Image (tube, rainbow, N blue to C red; front, top):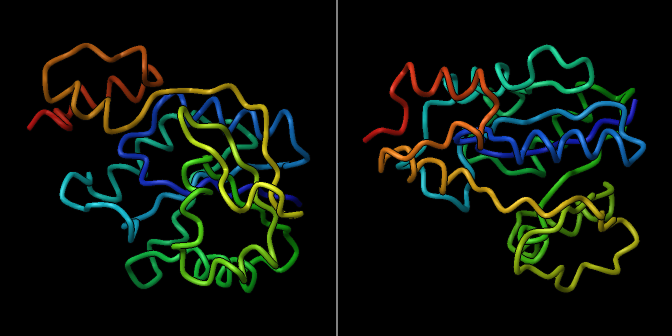
Length: 191
């Protein structure tokens, strides 16, 4: 089975994440997309991060039993911070029957050279890239394992949503309905 790995803090998961995961299922040869909830991205500040179990619960709520989208906790048991190369090695060992590809934003591709062992990732895995506002693909755009997609540009960020909630703005339509209900009911991101 060909599985796309969509790594993220998902702090919180929003309609942009869901639309991109669905796009990859519909417009590539991926048979499943796993939303890999990262406990700690080594390139991001952890101070505004909701607990990993709470973020995982929000992702599961967003997926709403979609048969080809799955929340993955694979990084929860690995050493932190989470490095993609370590996660990929673990997945390859645990699921040798599957083919894994990465899903990433154009902004991440631009800074891909900062990732641990990025050359090895490029050598062994296909990378599907979705466009991001104002970003270009940088030095990896023409690599044979890099696939630039025509996914719609979705200019929504989790940072925008967190800040809006903190500022008492109504952002319910930027989130799957059940995710909004959970965030609102639990008072997440209010402080």
